[in-house]
Length: 302
Image (cartoon, rainbow, N blue to C red; front, side, top):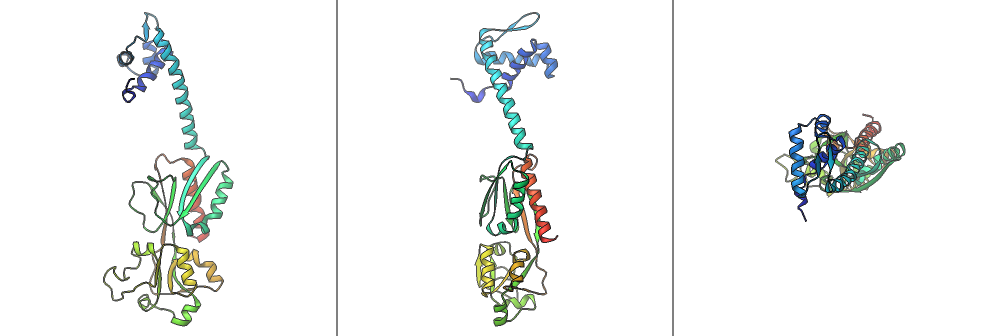
């Protein structure tokens, strides 16, 4: 059996097109390839099969028995290639097929309605959503889009910034009643802090113990890798938490949380989407990211 890794598929299709043109001259004109190149590639193909494939008449080309057998196979290959081209083009340009999305767990409550609306508008798109609390590399896992919070990890894949979410410090009325309300940034050194793991990773608090020199060295009351848990800890009066305003709106309305005014402008929480192939991203990926970004801006009022 011949080694297929050395097989010349382009030469095979050149043979197919030359036979359809019925002459090397016509094939040269149609394909805009020099006649000498076509002749050389056809001889190479005959050497590969160790068989004469063409009858080179003075007026036109004919096929040997081996050539006829190969040509029939070429017709099948050409048909399959055309189907593959059409299928690939459909996947690339149509809003259809499977779209696999990864996102943090606490992000779901903000975007579930928007994602449902996207699915309703584009019924041919089949969504597969996975919510968790870990970093996802779309190059290593079977996801088309991965939503991340905080500073994006180093990656060769394109990243689109969706929105920068304003953040504030929050505490439960019970906590404020028992411990008072800090007025200054450095007053936090005498309070209990509930911190998200990513806030430690991104060094949002450079004055936390072990993260640089400062007049205030604070040891967090608790560190969690789930934003909902951070909010629940704060609601239950365990300490003060830095959280996106969008996440705390309902709790503030219900009287479960109080927004604290401090003399420190908190950096917003960056929300980004990582995906494969910037120049060749299928339309459904671009449409989903655009819709998500627009929905987030409307909800936050930015």
